[in-house]
Image (cartoon, rainbow, N blue to C red; front, side, top):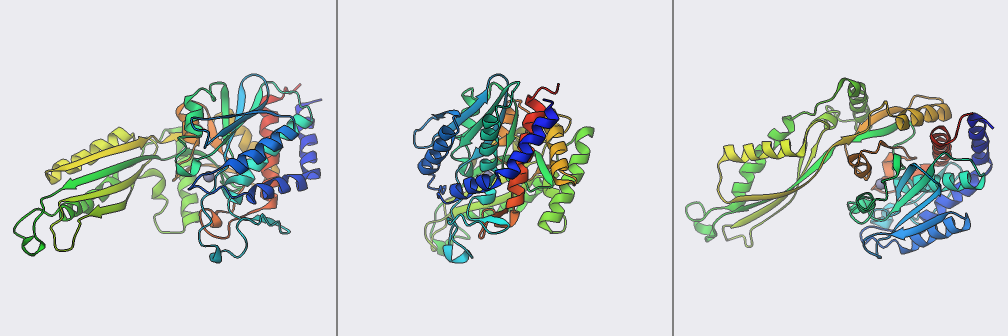
Length: 419
Ligand SMILES: [Zn+2]
């Protein structure tokens, strides 16, 4: 049987079995796996049972048994890896939801609840796809693997980062992260991050004589913060092949975020002092002020260059007793000429019958760990952006069904012999 007809057969099966797919997603939404605190035992057990019932081999791995990842797969050889996290952000104030965030309600057009978009329905579509390919005994030229990870919402150190660092992606030739993107775009790159912990010391004195005696650490910190926006002038740099993606990404950011100039978040540095702590008493001159600053760096700008600019700024201000430490992760991308991008876009455009545009994101995700390992990686998953990390999260049923079709299409194009 030719690859095209295998794909068509599988697409027809997805239509026929769509209720099963939607129920799988809804059942996962009914299991709260809020992070924090990050307990994923119930959802992990549910997914293990699903895989066992489907006859798919899987194992639990990870550095801490409290935060297990599931590695499951079918076939042998170079792997197409799907990745999805099973934790969700907390539902927050339940009175602000129009429905039970953990009801898993299925309406005529949507699945509703915390984690529908981010990202239990993307994960469900990937699990269902793998089970379908297994059920239908599709002859594979390699392996389809899935990494279900526990702690994307708090940084990934128990999940994807650990998996990649411990050899679980060594066999991967491509990776598809089922994070929410919406139907009309796939993510092919994202910004890096520099988190600076700034610690400015002063000299304590009684507040009543503070303008003459002592040294106010808060006022010293303010001098730095009043200049820190200078870092925002730094731009990323892009190769000619990345130029169109950059233009599209900026247009998309403008359209989605609807603020004048917001497209610049894609190719410029952004700076957010997020936490500031200083002083002990109102009538004392504070001798310490600590600030955490979240800086996002565009493609083409290394964290090293950013830090050197930050140091230059401190040097010009010439303040004493200023300390800082920082953590970094680099901006990362996959070229649009990579087969994983081309095949996903082709399948998505044929399923949706509209343009699907590769774009860079302003945020970051676990995709970075695969990319930094040299694995061509993209993100594509069903979502309605409005409810993500907010209230009234839902996802359209048609998006979930089409995501499964697109994942199947990618598997067929990359792993099924077209004879
Ligand atoms: Zn997510």
